Image (cartoon, rainbow, N blue to C red):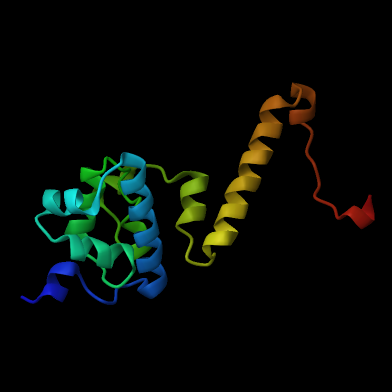
Amino acid sequence: MGGAAMAGRESGSNGEDGRRRFGRLLAEALKARGMKQEHLAGLLGTTQSSVSGWINGKYEPAAATVFRIEQALALEPGHLSRPLGYLPVDAVSAPLGLEGAIHHSPELDDEEKDVLVALYHVLAARRRTAPKAVRSTPRRLTSAANR
């Protein structure tokens, strides 16, 4: 097998966008743990150039490798695999939650996902701090012109 095969496929079920999102999430996870690409490569039995190719969206690792990365970095099942279209067995029974559903939506780009998650946090914080009487009152969404 050549180097490209070790690094992963060049196209996957979610294409270039999925590879880029996977790469960004992998880079963030490595940075958060203070782990270098070389260290992850050693844990996986691959090369630093393969890890770099994944991070840069050039290659897509095989599904089994993605699941091993999630385990090696102690990430929730699906954190890295879902953007590539893989669903780990462990994630089938785990609830995705609203934030997870937003982040894994193929219909939204990264900026739209960030905006929706931020809006969710604002609304959830308002609900937590609102008096109970206000919480039970249904609200209609209206435009500023209708107020």
